[in-house]
Image (cartoon, rainbow, N blue to C red; front, side, top):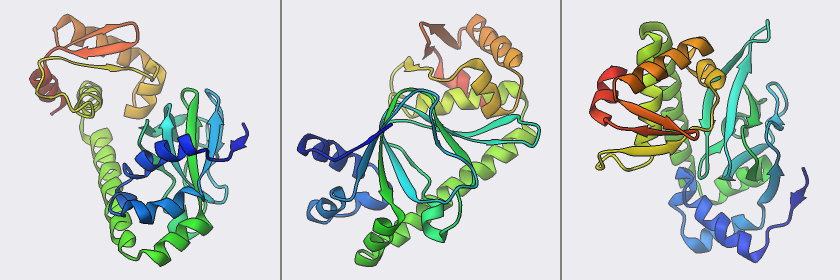
Amino acid sequence: MGETQVSETSDKKNLRLLRKVPFFAQLEEEELGPILAHLQERQIRKNETIFREGTPGEYLFMIRSGNVKIYKLSEEGKEQILAVFGPGDFFAELPLLDGGKYPASAEALTAATLVRLSRENFLKILSDHPSVVTKILETVGARLRHFTSMVADLTLKDASRRLAGFLYEKARRQDLLGQKEVRFAMELTHQEIASLIGTARETVSRILQQFQKEGIIDIKDRHVTVLDMDRLATAAR
């Protein structure tokens, strides 16, 4: 899909978006202003490939709307989803730091509006604002811990606990844990969830049905309502 120049209205939206990115959030508005001029917007169709593993890492991507999956393919063509990102998230920061290639592929799960920043402009921002480097290292470290935890879960936890953990993290991100029930859209298919947690689609369907029977969750119209956060957390341990 085509790129668009950033309009004044988009500038305001993108300024809010930049404030959600940990390593830009610390900058003052007058420091963020010049960055806006370097942003490019892309409208992405559902299932459109954003980049493929092994291609040059040229851009940092931020999501203004929609959902994106990051995944790898085995030699046999089996897909392993590494992460799913939504509005306010960012991805592909690592190649901008080391000048390497994208270590995984990215594809839109839904129609999406992405905002991207080139490596050249990204490095200029680092030069102008050295303090941003510290925040980037913290971000990369946090994601490394996430993937380390993910590997441990795949090794040490059964499918039921991995699925409960996935649902709990989805609910936790809604910032509604003080409420009795937490409801969120399920943008992934059962097959995609299975790919993310390392199991079979049939296993995901069976466990979701079991959680519903136990009164932990309810699923309707592609939305999940967590009826008991405490029980879901316990199921994830």
